[in-house]
Length: 66
Image (cartoon, rainbow, N blue to C red; front, side):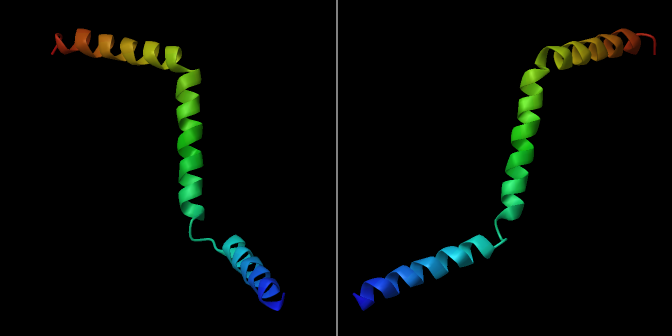
């Protein structure tokens, strides 16, 4: 019985230590930022495509003027 209680306490301490660790926080933050950016691209895909296409048309039309 004592052995089982010791294992539970050890697991609880390990879990508490895991919650206090901040080593992986940078990775989680970067992943969340990437997810948000991908979501914005998906939402505004049509508008971004129109802007990029119009920019390339202007660039190609004005390169002949040089």
